[in-house]
Image (tube, rainbow, N blue to C red; front, side, top):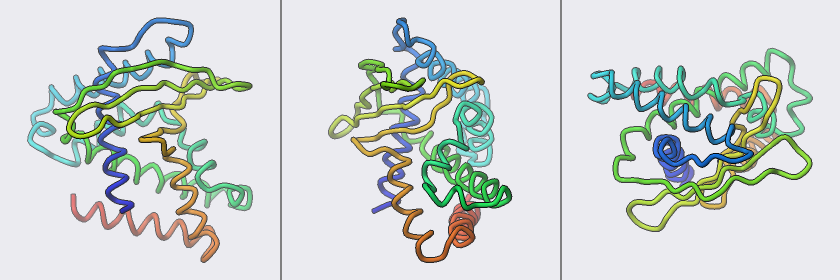
Length: 209
């Protein structure tokens, strides 16, 4: 069930980033949408110019995603939020490992979806500021086979500019979903156990590449 939901989220996210390149409106919050537009253009150009990617080379897709998409994601904020209160108890070394494994997980999930979105389109509906914060939510719908999928991006504006900090698919925020999973593992085995579980999942995924 979890793997099916992750796959659905990844396909929607990939479709949204690519299709929104032609749909970002200009208004007061246009910088956030422009970021998504730039990422989409970089991914499209990279995929079109690399025959290995077109041939399904997973390692090449992962490298493209890592280079073009992930620098615009605030992994520290995402990981901190997903881990919850236990983050404060983690050592700097544990935090670095958690962030690294979480990033690897999301890169592989996203990369695995890039070849499965040719039949999908996206309509950006609106961008809303989040009250009492430097954040906005870019709202859109992914349309293709079956019912439309609601796809929202939460972005935060910090010293380094806009960064993606969460994604909502069909009413479920990604970080909230992972927080529930991580919370169970943290309760059962603590921080090191969560790191080990994430590393195990990533290793298993890597062996199938």
